[in-house]
Length: 567
Ligand SMILES: OC[C@H]1O[C@H](O[C@H]2O[C@H](CO)[C@@H](O)[C@H](O)[C@H]2O)[C@H](O)[C@@H](O)[C@@H]1O
Image (cartoon, rainbow, N blue to C red; front, side):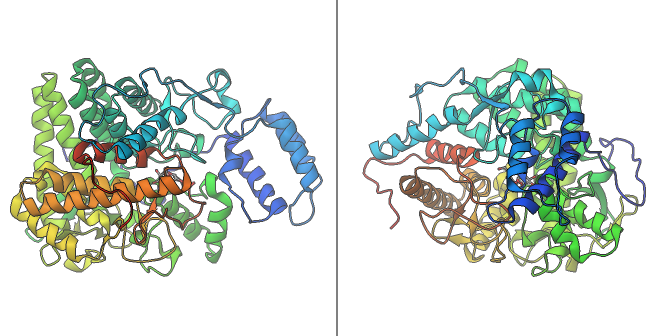
């Protein structure tokens, strides 16, 4: 791929970004906390989010002196006294920031929402941007060594609850909502922060914490810049963003994330996978990962499993049977040997966005290069991911032990024929949704897939207890599929899009009225119920859900007399 950096592909164990001394110490504190309190209501992330009051060495010394029993536990009294003396509360270093562009009812807000009831709720959701707006405290800026929270120059919108830092892919849907709320400055500030991370660490981090430096998340920075430009026409913003976007493109097409597949016509395709630069337990979930890995006796198997866990977190779908070779055995997680449909769609979108944005600022040579790259990837979608019988695009499984140097030959049996919402994400891209015959075929396939439920699109058909599986529905997945279908010239596709959007709006509304909150995920089998499963308790707030509801209400509106309760 001529747009990729030169390959420095090496065989053997992959790269690792070392943890900071503070982070390694907080993982020890987390382990002791688990021994001390036990598993019930234990959230490991809490301990790696604790800000230090003073320097690390004094704190470590005090920790080492705590009287410990043989199993590593400390008395609750001693542990609490230690935490109180040496740490401020988790979240103390993330402070409220008044959004500069928030007004209670923006001029021209959701013009198609005529129902007073729905309008009232939409204004409450809009007001949640104020609750979720944060900046780093001055201690983070002046003493970053005391915090795992990373210093960022501008305010952010956080997802909410335990997620008190900005997240990469969440920000795309947060921004879609902010644009409906006419909060353009807040939207641009988020992008400025993500670009700051890209400049500082070489990639946009999963989130703004020291424990996320070893991986990214689904790459949607170019899509954020595109949407903001589309609303504001701010050419200066595009000029500033273009070089970082090209830098990010190179990151995703560098050796660890890029592989070559040779199709039946002997044509090579450069495609991408998730791959974290980490081979230990995820610090934010260290106690959980260690327990999960306990079945492996051999160190190199353990390290590979830890890399799979972190790479799955990079995918944003943590966790799901989608990444498991055997869907009933979590330890068969194999994310690094999968070419995911959605990741490759995000990179195709990056190519198209960069081509468009470069044209906007007169960089025609860049436009040409990126259009060429997008045409190649478009072909790869037909040869590698498309399955004509199913009318869906399927993830492609690499042979075990894949390395980046040797092209692998495409085999039909390596397409994962299980149904996931991600199989329909290509519809989001105009190259696909503008083809009416294709859209009609894929729409039929979606209708027959089993994913369409009473309250939205299910993530998969497998009820595994993982959060990115049935019966959970996630706002980003609803949005990409609905937006794709609704752009099509096919009447049938547009009707399906509107129907899904209405079901999703209803379930968000009814759950909000019942619980007083917007939720991170919903149960698509039961209208008005939030989702569950996974390694942490269900969270509220919630950035991307708010963004998608506002974007749907802006697009589809709500008539004056239409009911909004669950039928
Ligand atoms: O602490 C466990 C994991 O939590 C995050 O993942 C989930 O929340 C994110 C924020 O809303 C979301 O982006 C992701 O899709 C969710 O699965 C975090 O991103 C993971 O890295 C972390 O291990």
